[in-house]
Amino acid sequence: MNVLILGPGGREHALAWKIAASPLTDRLYCAPGNAGIAQEADCVALDVADHAAVIAFCKANKIDLVVVGPEVPLVAGIADDLEAAGIKTFGPSKWAARLEGSKGFTKDLCKANKIPTAAYERFKGAAAAKDYVRRKGAPIVVKADGLAAGKGVVVAETVEEAEAAVDMMFGGGLGTPAWEIVIEECLVGEEASFFALCDGETAIALASAQDHKRVFDGDKGPNTGGMGAYSPAPVMTEAMNARVMDEIVQPTVRALKAMGAPYKGVLFAGLMITKDGPQLIEYNVRFGDPECQVLMLRLKSDLLPALIAACDGQLKHFDLRWSNEAALTVVMAAKGYPGNYDKGSIIGGLDEAAHVDGVEIFHAGTKVDGGRIAANGGRVLNICALGQTVREAQARAYAAVDLVKWPEGFCRRDIGWRAIAREKT
Ligand code: AMP
Image (cartoon, rainbow, N blue to C red; front, side, top):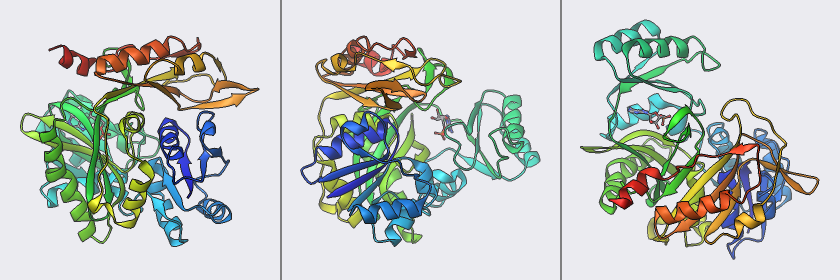
C-alpha cells in the first residue's frame, strides 16, 4: 500500500515509524514532515489546507490510505473531501470532528446521552455568563467554543477571575471574539487520557496515557502543547478502562451514528477520574501529541491493518496487542517556548542518544541544515523509552536526553513523577 501521512510533528513521526514497519507498506509519504520523518518517509511540501492539491497528489502517487495527524485539517473537512474523491482516509468527517471543534456540541451530546461530564451552561453574551458565574461561585471553568490550540480554557479560582475570562474571550483575547462560551463545574480528581479506535459503529480500546502540560518542573509555569507523557496511566486500571468504554466512548459512538455522522478515526477522551468515577473533560478527534509517541512504542501489533479496519467498518473482530512495559517521553523544546524562541540552532548527539537501551527518538520540529539536524519549532524532539516500570523508562529517557548536545534546548526533569510516586508506594 502507498500511504500518505498529513502533519509536521512528533505524533506524525511516531505514526510514520510504525506504519513504515508494516509489511503492507510499499511507499510512505508525509506532508510536510520533518527531518526525523524523512528517515521513514518521503517528505513532500504539500499545503495541507489546499485539499485539491492533496487530492491531486494522492491520485498522482496512487495513495491507498491517508492518515490525518492534526485536528485542524479534520475540522476543515479534509476527510470528507478526500473520501468524496475516492481516497480512503483515516480520520473523522467534518461533522463528527465537531466533538473537538465545538465544546457546546460535545456537552449537549453528553447531556442527551447521559455521558458523565461536568455540569454546564452555554452562553452567547457576557452579561448572562457573568450572572451564572456569580450564582455558581468559584472555582469554575470558562471555555471558548471552537479550536483554540489549548488556550481556550480558564480554570478560575475566584469569581473575579472567571468574570475576567468571560470578558477576555468575548472581547477577542484569544484572537477573534468567542461567539459562544461554555461555563462548567470544576471537577476534582486525577486527569488521564484514553484512546479508542472507532469505525463508525464499533470502538475498541487502545491505551491510556498521562501528559504534563505545564512548561516547568513541578507542573509550574504556562501551559504548553505537552512537555512529556507516559503510558499506561496508573489510575486507568482494567476496570476503569472498561467503565470509560461503557459509560463514555460507546455511548458517544452510538449517538454519532444515530445522528447520521458515524465517527471513524481515533477518539481521544480527556478524563477526570473523580471519586465517583470517570468524567469526560473534552474530546479530541486525533491522537494526542506527545501521547501518540508513547502509545506507538507500546503497540506490538501492526498499526496499518487497524487503521484500514477503522476506515472499512471492520473493527468488530479486531484485537490489538500491547506491551506490558511502560513507555515515557520527554519533550525537548527550544529555550523560550511556549513564548518566543529562536529557530535554527544545531542539535548533536542524536545517534549516541538513540543507542541507549529501550530508547526511540521522534522529531517534533526539526529540519536538515547542511547535513546537520537543526531546531525548527518550539517543541523539537521527543526522547522516548520503554521500561519495566515508569521509573525505568524515565531513567532511560533522561540518560538519552543527557547525550543530546543542544545548549539552546531545555526539558522538564520530572516527567512521570506522579506515576513514579505511585510505584514507590
Ligand atoms: P480542555 O482544553 O477542555 O482539555 O481543558 C484544558 C485543561 O483544563 C484540562 O486538561 C484540565 O486540566 C482543565 N479543565 C478543563 N475542564 C475542567 C473541569 N471541568 N474541571 C477541572 N479542570 C478542567
